[in-house]
Amino acid sequence: MLRKPRRMMSQINVVPYIDVMLVLLVIFMVTAPLINPGQVDLPSMGQNLSQPQQPIQVTLRLDGSLTVLDPQDGGGETALPRGQLVSWLKAAQKRAPDQPVVIAADRNVRYEEVLRVMDLVKQADVKRVGLLARARSS
Image 1 (tube, rainbow, N blue to C red):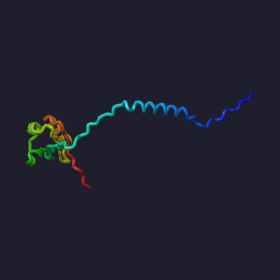
Image 2: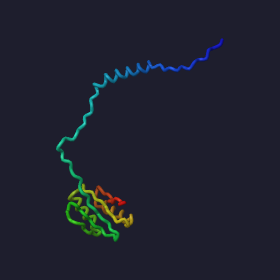
Image 3: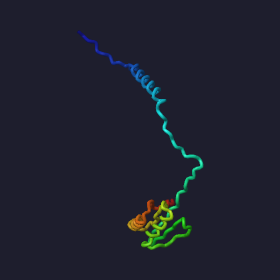
Image 4: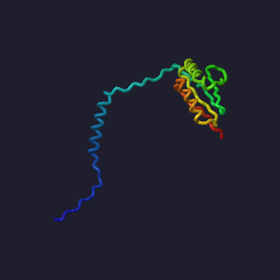
């Protein structure tokens, strides 16, 4: 008995897919009204957004001297010896506890010296410390 070789079927039966899709559609239509939408608390008009505080700038010069510029004092730069930097920063942090401190250094200062100044700033329990960089001019 000779069997006829089976032909490849070139059609897809999509009826089962349509059935599944209709069942899912009914399920979503029934459950959608039962779901509570999440609430979003939007800010109201008239809320006063606080301005970010200007940071205290500690400048390390090539000769190793330190100067401090506090924008809240309104004065110019104040030269400080390294031994007084921690106490000066602690006093400034008592006035404004969230005021950040940035360290600016001459480009030729050794990285090790910058880290020593950063360590002094951390000893003063300053929470926000950054490094100040200037954009390169073309």
